[in-house]
Image 1 (cartoon, one colour):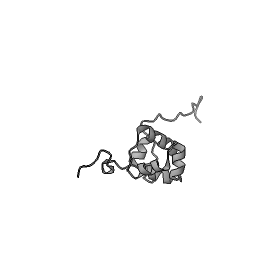
Image 2 (cartoon, one colour):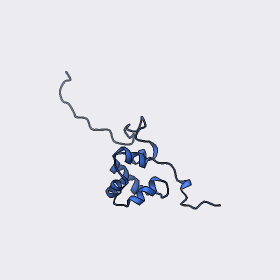
Image 3 (tube, helix red, strand yellow):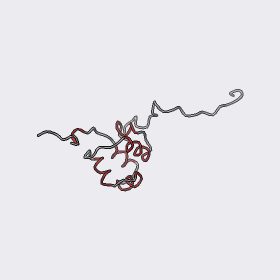
Image 4 (cartoon, helix red, strand yellow):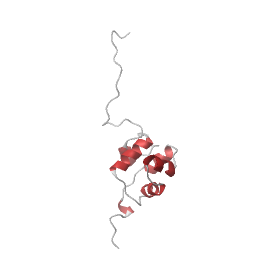
Length: 100
């Protein structure tokens, strides 16, 4: 039997559920934050429904991480909180005068 284009067996693994649970949110709470239904969140987490780039960015923002991290790392991974190499370095205060 041929697979349909929307077949979940073709969708790649992601860590959206793990990040949501790590942040202590229910599907309903995350759905409210993203202005969508909890049923949609459930289908995305179970790979029954695809997602858009806009969803991924909004979800990452709501979960306090980077969109790429949702696709590549569980929140419990040792490197899950390393800075994003594409991000700008943090601004450091400029000190004037001699260093003592």
